[in-house]
Length: 475
Image (tube, rainbow, N blue to C red; front, top):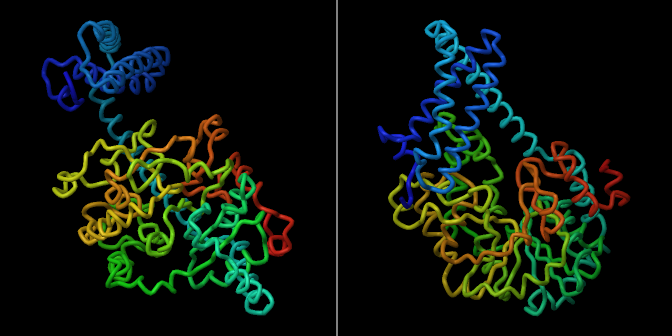
């Protein structure tokens, strides 16, 4: 039977899947009763049989075929014997069920409260700018406006650099307001490059950090890598009449939604209400051809990545007529389209396969010639204008990215982009082979809540002996 679902199986009156599931539910109740009665041996036997039955169900769901009587007969019989034995122990089921319900409700309430607090505190910690980073920005800004020689050096370097529009160079772009994180991206790319003099970094920041960014990348050199710094406020085309999301971001109701979750009754998880989504820097990735009209191919990098291999090979990858080269994320973590989009909406159901494989932002190869030819930014505008009420997807840039580049994405080898270092355990072999390591998640390596075992991978590209870093207590 092709495409069988667990739901269909559960609704069938003669399904062994349903019988196993009912047995497991009853056995779980008896496990609690046995523990309450201090019969730990019997509780252990029940738990072991529950795991055995769950393994059968899991295997059936994975292969997408129903359980047969033959393969489940032993598990059903063994569980039935244990359930019969539980009944012979003469537990007071009615009393125990009442106690069990009360205990389950209390535990669920406690767990819900703890999870909510954990999410809130983690989000607050992730959003806070560390004092050392704030200090660095202030000192660099002061240095920029107080040092005319520094400004002159920056102007001379900018005028002389013909590499900025040379398509024989390796062009990378970063959109960030984090000086140190951007510096690590540039430094790690340079140190692991076979030809650093062919690398050009195009960095876009905001008005607040513009002077500090210019000062940092003028004072420091990165093995001959060219670094251009711009601020998005200078882009004349970036206005609410052309950019739908800019109009939405300026809306007071949208801002209230992001910052406080009003009009939502707490239904949306706090991670989706991160005010970072209000920054235009987060949405510039959909306007790369406008930002760099002379370029043909660009590698986009997030600022929470670190490079540990030479990336020149990315520029020779054949995208087979596609616009976006990205690493898919559905193999192990099952990040498919239905995880990000609202399939109860007819527009989503009509246009997108719910089982289509998701992919990651953070390290993407963009063919800008093909992008312009297919008017990809126009596709992005189409979907943004239809999501004003946030019914197609909630928040973030990945869902609109999945819509925009649907059918236009070429899967890259997974070793190019290894994800998860900011929230989970990652296979050490994947880390060792990875060209780009991505600290996606709240536990960024420059924060105190960063995962300790992964911090050295990022910190080795920070020169803690730098006078400015020492003055700002980086360690």
